[in-house]
Length: 386
Image 1 (cartoon, rainbow, N blue to C red):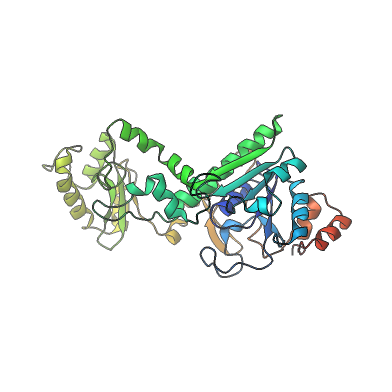
Image 2: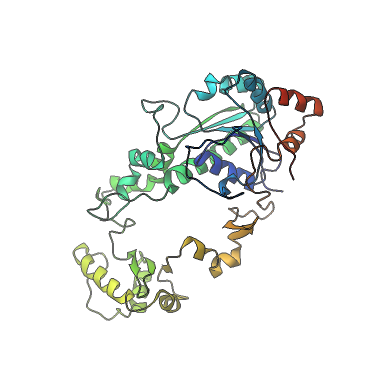
């Protein structure tokens, strides 16, 4: 039983950040019921083939509902009246046009937390524009600092906008709003925008800019690969080692393990000498394989670690010791996180097919057979969990 056991979440099908946020809630024990379209859209998001491979959809049960039909609005509002949290990721105004916006939902359920996930936010001149992760982090300022000096910005996968600045922020927001509502407050709308979440992730850099310790030029600063002691280096076998020896005592251990401690090198913070340091570090790392460097740095505080591929990471001893990855439904994937000492999180079921487990979920939400019949008449589709 997770920390959110007993919390009911009604999720409307979307891509990217909203499903990721709902995955976090489901992993922590929330009962997440997803409202899917009757037919999968063929032009949204990356294509993931194979049963149950859409891992961010894990932990749910599903019903189907055609929200474009007029009778669907009443059915959706009926579900909202039984939910603690609603999550939707449509363009601003879509839910209102369907007749199931926050005003209608909160009128039925004053304690409801209505979570809204968008790229640009619910308001502003860009609110109605299409976009994706890269566009949102570009306008947040964060993308400008990611990449090599003199080169184009590098897309950091879709981790900064969709997931860190989107789904995680949304999950935090709705849980905080639920906490407020359950302590005597009222329900409310949570407007989570990836452009703002990404900006928040960059808060430290605004402080560095204000203090004169950040140059607005990629690859010229600490943390962006500008320093030779915060970067990655190619090894003899074509792999890479990451180096993060920021503090002087850790930097000293780095030089020692690279057998450069007695060399005539520029000082660590001598910016003019950084090209020399980088060249010496690169030459040193190129002399041995990644595994050889792992053995050399084992047990040290030089802040050096191998750059592992996705599939390699799961078998690293640190991850194995903590159970950081699990094999569930035949698929290796990150385990729920963070870890709770008294109410551990868990993956309870794989991503559902459309309508899979919906009937059982509705019964768990307190509906009887007569209500299920009415819901089916309104267009809701479901099947029993197998």
